[in-house]
Length: 141
Image (cartoon, rainbow, N blue to C red):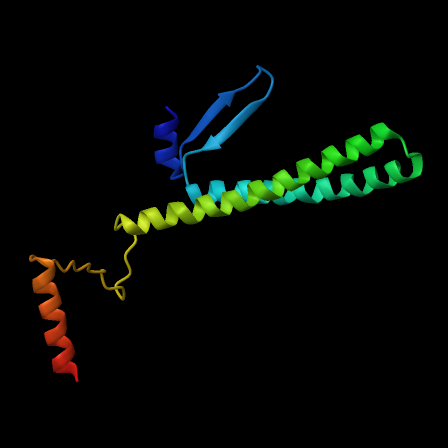
């Protein structure tokens, strides 16, 4: 039924996922670029909120000198660095997807020429190769 409605209203079909009975998550049907942009935005949001929490945790740890506060601060630093690392991996994965699509020929520009690989094979023994090289050197000089 949702496919017919999507067709009638000319919108992308959606998938409704019930997670815990109370909340509903609506997922639009797959556009990898939109998914990557969404994930990237969430990583930036997490990084920004993590930085705010980091500043607060540093103030608390500095003022209280409590070992537990210092431990929480170090955990927060570790988690924030993992979010940043995850953002870099997300960008790398997106670049890898684009590269694999281009190599499969899905996105070819008209200005690009296909690359040609030429393999040169020598069928002979080392004496023949040595003779050929010395002839080429004599011809070059």
